[in-house]
Each structure stands twice: as C-alpha cells, then as structure tokens.
Image (tube, rainbow, N blue to C red; front, side):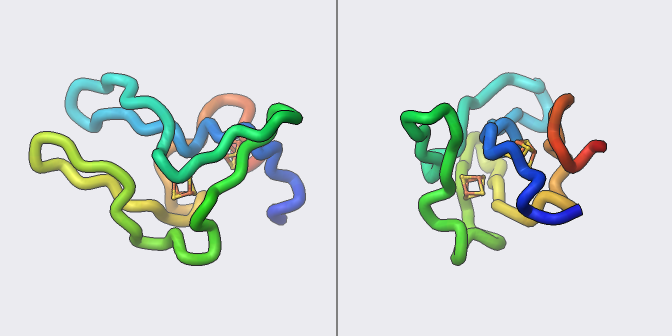
Length: 78
Ligand code: SF4
Ligand code: SF4
C-alpha cells in the first residue's frame, strides 16, 4: 500500500469520541481544497501531535497504518 492510493478524502482525520462515539468533526489542521480533496497543513510534522482535547481525553495524530480510524471506502482497507 502506498500513499499514492490515498483518495485524500480526509475521513481518517474526522475525530470520534472514544467513549460516546460522538462525531467531533474534522481535525483543525485539515484543509478542504476546491477540487474536493483535503490536505493536512502540518503533514511533515503531524506524528504524535495533539490534535484535539476534550474532557481530559487527548487525541494524537498518527500514521494511517496505526490509526483505528479507517472508514469504509478508505484505500487502506482494501
Ligand atoms: S494532523 Fe493528523 S488528523 Fe489532523 S489533518 Fe493532519 S493527518 Fe489529519
Ligand atoms: S480515509 Fe483513507 S483514503 Fe481517505 S484520506 Fe484517509 S487514508 Fe486517504
């Protein structure tokens, strides 16, 4: 699996609360492009960066192979 198969849909950058499963929206570092793709604004420096905090819960960015957030349709599930 190589990065060029990523559809850049941004769905793996959508945060979900681990207890309530509430949708917390997209990461603040995600940019939506006019062509429908998305871009991480801190891509080269994203690993282990804190991307969201709520009620003492902290979300860190990680690589897609370690992420639990690979939605249906993601190229990394294929
Ligand atoms: S920091 Fe991580 S979760 Fe946020 S937009 Fe970049 S890759 Fe996605
Ligand atoms: S969900 Fe999968 S296809 Fe979409 S941006 Fe994330 S890694 Fe790429």
